[in-house]
Length: 529
Image 1 (cartoon, rainbow, N blue to C red):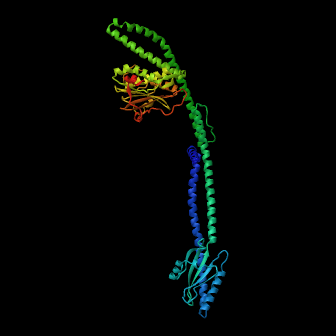
Image 2: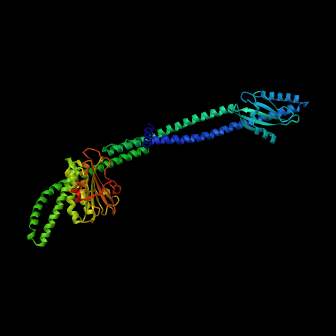
């Protein structure tokens, strides 16, 4: 439950700019308000306590002067007179206390022969810290200290000083409870807390409103861009006002109009091109058929010709084969472009298609001194495919691997798994440079334009193979490194319309660690495949 909530909040944080701005404003403003609140609270606290300290010292000065006058006026310095005078001093000073400035008074005798202490009934003599008594005794000046009353729950301020009298030695202490100051500080802190929270919330609300004014046009632009990407090229943003966002909307609309025109032109050009290729390919079949008939007659009669004419007849036959293959590929590409390809899928053992592709490439492999190595499972791999198209894909991959393998072994592997069925074809030739794995499926693209074709390829084989794989709902992917060769992986679903999961064979051969050692072509019968 908590993880789902955290995931939802994380998604909202990533997906909403307004949320990020509001949360960031809340955190930063909260931190600033907290720091300012602590600083102000400390300043107010120090100010209140300093004011209380100054007023307490003033009260102490008055009390010391009054006590000095009273004790100096005693005619008989006996202990009874001194004690009575001390009580009068305590009573007189205590009566000056009010509800707004309440305090208690303690008159402490420093003469060993005098009374130990004289105080009002509410004064607890233990509330005077021993350190304060020692400071007053040593410095013979006023001093103050903070203490606590009632088991440490109520703070108080104690100020004291020495009574300047020759009649008797006394120290006068005032005890000021800080209850009112503490209530004042609590009130200030609560007010600052509520005010700070209100300010933070107002800042967050302001940030959310301001951000919404900026984000709303951006969201509208994003939604319009999504609709344009989906093909609704006539959608436009609404332009309101004359500010920067209005300029953005106007620029976006001009861009959309330009894109619409360009796409329309490209569509028309592509349609004309496809129509031209289809028409030319179709129209060329009739003259090519006539030329083929004449070339066959010349090729069959080459034995009676001079060597030069016989060689010309052979070259004519070979070039006609290439030309017919190119026409066939152009017609096939035209059908894919026009969406006129029909998939004739039926259950097929994919092992038989792999065998057939390898057998077709065997003569070329023999001429190139290339060994064909296959790895097929013992059990049938029955897949719902169009056998003619998949056979063409596999033949194209194996022949290309032999052509570019530079005489090194070509490995063909078939595996089936929960994610689908994979066929990988690996050669150990020159490989592919970075970026060529996507270009290799382009029409008429060649890795080495100066390389001579030995099998009469048209340059459209991999493009047609990619379209055939997509027609089945599958993938055709390439991997390659310079000097390490290349790998082509065909991945197909078990049945048409079923999604493909994790392929059972890796595209990078370095990741293939659980596949058995491949077996040569002659080992099929012995393995029962």
